[in-house]
Image 1 (cartoon, helix red, strand yellow):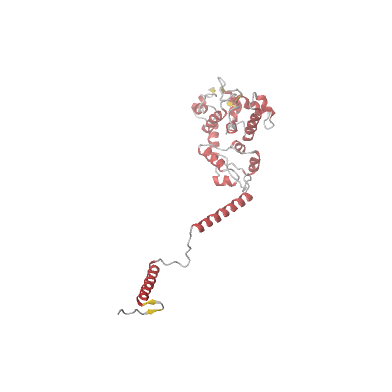
Image 2 (tube, rainbow, N blue to C red):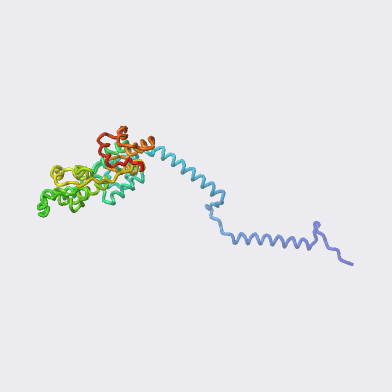
Length: 304
């Protein structure tokens, strides 16, 4: 006769033994997981995708607020910090703080790196993007140091000329084609002035009158009558600007035009579709009769 199994709380002894083993197994597993899991630092922060998204959005919002506040305090076309500066030595940071656009500061540094100099405040008017209002605001703070070395060199050449120069005092130079070596044969013209004459001729697109040589940088103090007696031009050949095809930047590069004037000419051309003659420029208030006469030889009104 089979033995009847004892039942405890509806479970047999074998079932209770299985439950006990299962509990031991679960407890052991939990302890093992806890044992091998790295301990958390008290101050550590668990970052999930949701937290990172919220953080990024918060940072973007703060950046936007800061930019808005910056634009409110420092409007784009307002000079930020007024201080005395020398355009020949000021660094890009100083120029930007004065109100120059970063690309304007970069262009100024490039110009200086190539040997360019600002001899007088008016030279800044030729900087691309320089408006009349900005120039007027900057003028009281422009302090250009006198270039004593160049002045000394030229004064020495004028006061004690080399013998070979004295022997060539009657030399006549063709201003249309003369290089720096030929120009230095003239009384009062040193290396610096010779370079400036050649550079100015290139900027103009060629001389149309010998008197234009006096407009080059560094020609103050030269005996004009004496110099002009030794210059002539065998012909007039200039590089003309096709006014109906070029943009503002090309016009503004010419020494006789400022940026604002070039922009006005460009707008007039847009209104009239094309310009036919130099007389149409007389309609512009920003151009004096003298300026129109000076720029006329350098403008081409042809259709093509």
